[in-house]
Image 1 (cartoon, helix red, strand yellow):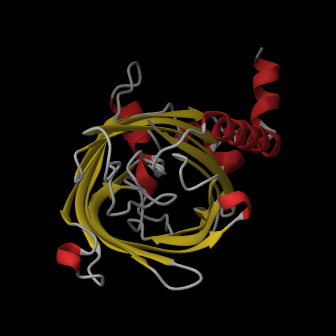
Image 2 (image 1 turned 180 degrees about the horizontal axis):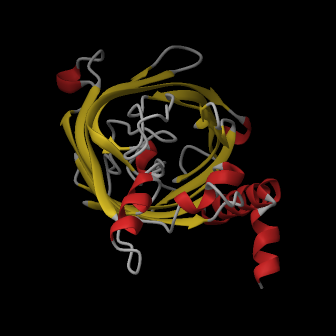
Length: 308
């Protein structure tokens, strides 16, 4: 059993291919007529890792609009792999809330990998302050405020501090984000453009995957995407994101964490379907100090979202 587990952990390429294939089969198998929605990494309606101002609600249909998602991210041989299951519920046209559980598969580096422990819980909520095209003004973006709360985070500096104080029972820490974001679909022809940007106050490093930050900081984020018509009335979205991170994790003042960059493609099989399938590459962290290489600069992830 242990030998099989080590072999599985040392094959991230095969692991990622299987996850992408499973997600693609799931996306095609669950497709049903409805409005397409997509959940980001932490469960909120978003791009790949950053939130959008839109919510998991629809213009027509039930007052409660649930969306479920599976996320996979190969963070490399040091950090390991992450799997997430999310459920998000849109209430009316302006509010959403949800829950995500993160599962972690340990990396294979004997000196650094133990800094990343078991997964944690994520709660989120979002409210639209200004709907897109408010009062029929086509230039007005959607503007929303939201929060993300994480509990039982035991990674990096959190693990070091907690294991030093109570080695027999290592607990986790909590951290969170409070953000404001504006998003706009620019109906340029023949290729519409999606623009999004905002700022978050956070005391988390790399959305909790890097543990906590030493203190709350204001960090900016943004995204741009181009919407193409695909075969058989499908929609293909190509985009990129940037998300600033706190400068260093809690307990590691000499480590330097760069801005996270992602490049992704989102596929909607048909406009009437409520399934989205994403594949992306994220630049997380490589050499964070002269003697420490986290080997997570060009990592692949995949996710699928399905709205009921």
